[in-house]
Length: 338
Image (cartoon, helix red, strand yellow):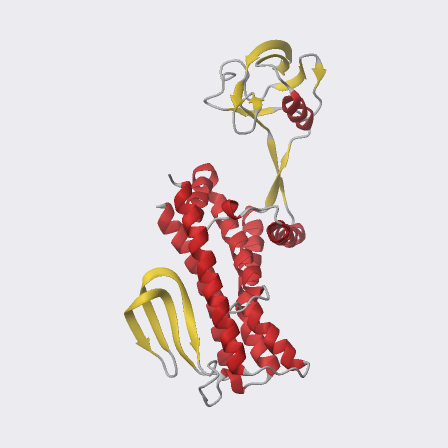
């Protein structure tokens, strides 16, 4: 199921990207010989007036075949016959559509929820995990007053205390139905985080938005998504993220599975995040990517014209490097499975 979900998410993102190129090309009357959904052998073909619309075997992504991009082929109204700014629009359109998809998800999800969930200002227990040793000791609705004599006024105080706590058993004073109770709670040790945990979660309150607040929140959520992706790319460039930490399609299946198990509703936000990732990645000034091709167009706009034959060779080298990177990342994904 997670594999199918991953293919669907990637398929939608790449399809939207290619749709951007297709619509921009047709806007400038550039012939597009094929618009394909999926990869591999053709399953179904619909012959349009100027374009073949194909459904292909592998349900992942798609592509558009824009005529006139080859340096040694002259096509009437082809891509290379158009003005530099028009070619820029066609190349940028795919990235633009990825950003639009993420924005629509952010805006639509915010409007659908109609409000925001915020942490309750008081340290009130919103739930106790089934696996917690405190399951029959603490209860939903308990207000934590102090832990080991340390006053707890808000949930942040509780998390700070637990972050520094080294004991495997603590005394917790709570307010339950107007009565103060002192409970001895055994803790569970999280090996990965190297921390003792109670196994409780905070109370979350819901505040309904007005229409104007929904619009504002939609923009804010989109901005936060964009900032998080930019930060990730900065960490990658600066070397803070190692090659082993990068995930390809196989690693993404695990991410999708984890998100689905924790909260399937977050899959829509993961789609928005991945769409921005695909957009920014394609915008990188690297040969064969949209960003690499855009660089040559911008140079032409400033009067620096490079031969199409040389440009084609540069992009070919870029494709080889990208394929090598894909194989490396996929290899790391497979290695992590064993």
